Length: 282
Length: 316
Image (cartoon, rainbow over all chains, first blue to last red; front, side):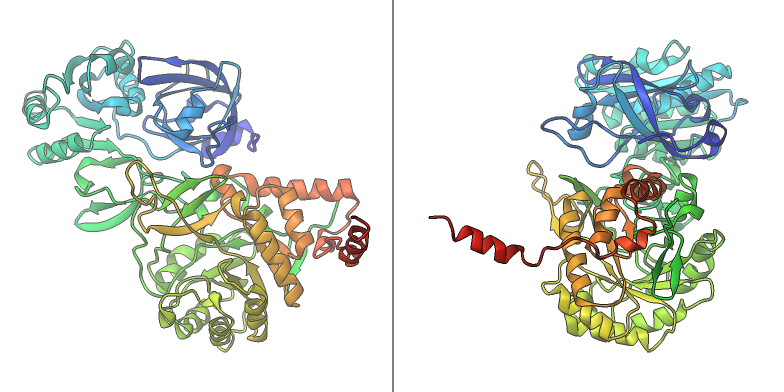
């Protein structure tokens, strides 16, 4: 694959970009970090919440076929630099993990919509579980640059899995960390914490990714706070990533009307209030 | 530079490369120049409103993918006013793909989309036929004939019929389509398949079974194109696992007059113009002046088997 668009067209186009791997390694025992660089100015056109489709390499014994959608974890500082944070879970991420610095990786994007954010916000609340934090990390940076106060609630299996520093990346935040092993990440405990934060801090917006249970909890709690913007980044099995194949649909409640929307196109960021509870099939 | 134009019945295309229905929608204008394609084949529309199949709707397989999207549709009226207009401004022939569950409904739907802005109609008769226990029309020559006849009696538009690789006697099905008045054959749709997650023991598709596409099916599709080419005189549009210009040329040599590219676009949304450029290069390299000269020009040595038999008889 090669680039098919000239730099001036890139801001509005989606293309397959050949990137070179600049850094790649373990962040902790579960998650890996990869930074790639394209000759195209992808960092400038990629918005918080967007994703790319990665052409994971073929190895001797493993041949991923479809591209793998992956949220952008960070952009820059160079114009062509894009970062991803991922969990090695299957065939695609398995071969991705074998790439070394200097190798090539083809990525297609940027794809999807972005988080709603206004620089005039006073405070925003992030609620993240596991590697779901990667999707919101660019928005943390954006909020920090705009001088918006940040509250961060992270949920992890254990301290070994925790990526608090990787999430904030130096941004100032009021940080709450919860774990599975001590029960602090249980929905009942989170309900008390999040209800208090929403009530006391009255954030302008709350963002979440990585846990359906936390998403549904926030939906319930936000009923009492109609002024707070609530958004969630969702996942669904995809093929094209551009809204063409209609694989990644989920049902949403759009102002009383139930509609199938494409996670890759109308999303991956959706209003928390529109998400419907039952989501898993097959 | 080689002449890439091809003819499908009365329709002239600037080149033989077009998307396969279901693998193309207007969003691809962000990734490629739609004026560079031979035609624009839109996702199938059905007269009846349909929600589509349960998720997951796609599953990766070795060298390909399974899908069971289920042709979500908001009906013909919505399609005509809210889907079709986006495709008609590129100076590229627009092909409307129709899916229906009875022969009569096929005829009516095709009549309804016989519009001036529609260059050709593709009837996806590989979809389930409600009058035959859900078995696809194109599975048998009889139901193929009935559906194609019903359509032909309702439209004078150029009309292509998309066959299924799941049919056991493709030559008979292709001849039935030709006899009933189809202008061209699209060969073909996906191959019915299935995949299971051995840990969860669940099917990988919400719909359990689905259509296999991608390079995994290319040799099957190529063989079917060649069998159709031997069976009928109407043009054939080849489809199944095409990813490169070489693949496209292979289908043309087997008998295709044009090709459709489906799954490959999911791996590289800009792949179709690359195939067009590749065909131009291939023609230049191999001294082909007009790409349409490739159609059916696979070099078959009809005496080879006889010579081999005589040769083999010399062995002990």
